[in-house]
Image (cartoon, rainbow, N blue to C red):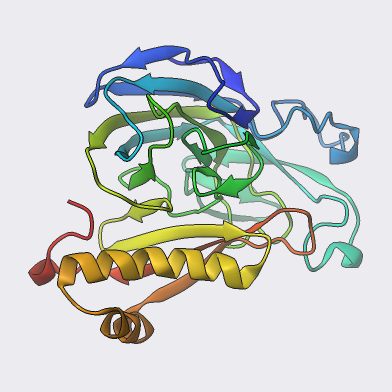
Length: 294
């Protein structure tokens, strides 16, 4: 099991393990606060923000080369028996309507216990990806390499595709949530430690520019930027490119189809804040037309 962690995505991170494509591997993760919060008495303002959003890894995948795609199958996600959720200063649309607060959230029989209500957990990985091109990216920020995409569709049974930017890909993950709403408007979900098992594989000589997420019935691309319109462009353009390549349609027909059958959703949108917006654009799987990614 991988237990070492880092605070950025970087081509300079030393891999903690080397595996062959097709291998399964398990990661032990800390919560997004690096387990610094131990009680409701601690507000986020007391934390060392140089130690947030740790990612376990990285793992070097033999044979992964620039221009390939890393395939990540999420085989299992297990979370602990309690997590914490907190408001963050100057973060989200309602930060002026309330105060700073930390709440301990018990997990009982697969349910989140919030005050006097319960609802099912949805274990997900918020931070996941590969080393970026160029400069290092802190784990708290998303990008074309993945990172802090905070997409609540990244759950057990889903599959992710990342562009390989450096030899070995240097895959890492962390920031589990027992539950997180789309947009994570307050800046945190039910932050919790846990364990994740994945299988890593490769597609050789296949180009994508942004992470792609495959679920049981949908294809999504996840884009991010400081500007909402750019994030939407990156995600939708990636899906358009895949449709044109796979379905044999021109760009205009692909665009029209996306407007008629597509789905646009916000993964991370706790504005105002200094965090980029992360969005996903998806289209349904169409059996008759084949897979968008082979």
